[in-house]
Image 1 (cartoon, rainbow, N blue to C red):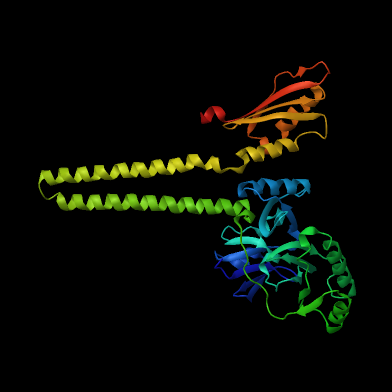
Image 2 (image 1 turned 90 degrees about the vertical axis):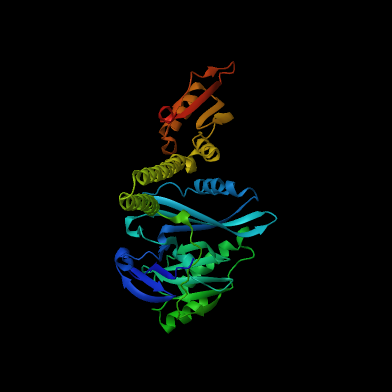
Length: 405
């Protein structure tokens, strides 16, 4: 990204604005700091971010999103948050066992972090530049934060619990974290060999105690290591995405209106000039205006066609995503899905349950799921087999199917 302006959480309170890698200003309020600028990349505080590496089989790129989503569900990262949950991923290594992804999850995105004019968002750890095979320790909102990288992507991010001052205790906590990561196959060739220390308020005694207890070489830095990294639209808050769409629609409509205005202005000017001439010339001008009008109608039809296509890009309608969500609704045992089929946006599920009650429970769970709130679910009476199991068929139809047709 060409933007060199970055807003990061301050070491104690508030926010710091960096431009070209240098600090330019500070403020307790993010929006006051940014003002009306539209070139600022905002770093999510470490307390809002969870990162982890994961190896997935080499497959079609379009399937990775649903596979990552399943990993988040398995780790419980999509529940228990009051605010918006966002996630992003990037391939950081390829091998015979599959591709290694660095996954970042941002939870509880509060209004404090939302600026409609922001150029982009990323974890604050991803906006620091460190040498290869190095980790980073810095201070953020009164807490020490450790980031471990694979390539240029953070794969382990932790707010340390040993206090806000350097010393043997903090070094011991970092040593334990590194010891735990050595058993992770994703990290076997990416363990840090040095630690970049970006803590400005520590004394010489504190640093000496810290360096003696740490199992890594310490590289202190007095210069800024802030640098724009990879910025992904997947980490944009919903309010920012909505504001961008509004601006894009407004710009598109302005272009259409400008074209119409110019077209009619040209026609009107020609009419005024030609009106002093013969009736034949006036008739010719009317024919020219008639030529412009179909172009306007075509522009309007194209605009409406794009509006009609917008629902087709909604991830929640993809069959693989719907199947993943349907599977998550199954009870721990007693229900087996025999067939899953989609037709257009309709969903049909056939399966076998231990009893009729379990089949009805699955129907009720699907009706209660927030992810399927756009569907009406129905099920004929399950068929009771000789072994007392129940064969069922559940059908889901979009609630607005009648209106769409």
